Image (cartoon, rainbow, N blue to C red):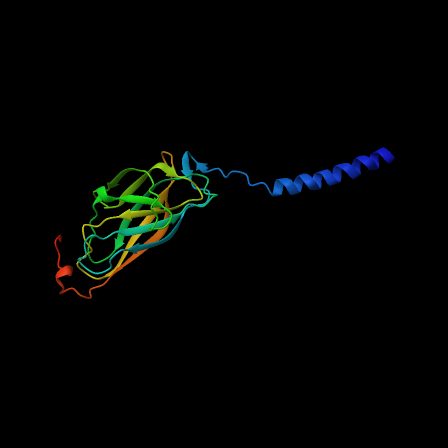
Length: 196
């Protein structure tokens, strides 16, 4: 009987100790695969969108889209599509000027990009990261319009994130909102040089 109690007194505390240790260990999160399609375990989050100049016809403009890739994403961020969903005019971008940085728009830490393309029908822009953005990182994509639209208003851009893999499920993150204003349109600096 004495041996039995000694064993019990040792096993129970040992089990409690192991349970405490294991509960404090963060295990790596794996991406979910359903029927061969890769999904994020926890998708990236669209932090916001902004522009360097918000008046009509402005040139030398940059539109920024900032995303957070959570540590429990399960997979890195391979690519992002950005598609204009609302706005009076169609904004045209110079894809060769596309850049990305780690952190917010003022960061100087550039992120490697693969090919940036635009769908002929939908006009959605696809930005590929090379290498993919690791979980736990913030990334800001910089798109360069040839110029701001000629009409003021709210311009909405749908943002969708993809993990690596073919095929991979695109997670819609929401709309980046860019507001363009008409004030000062008679100024020389606001006159168009590129307009369709």
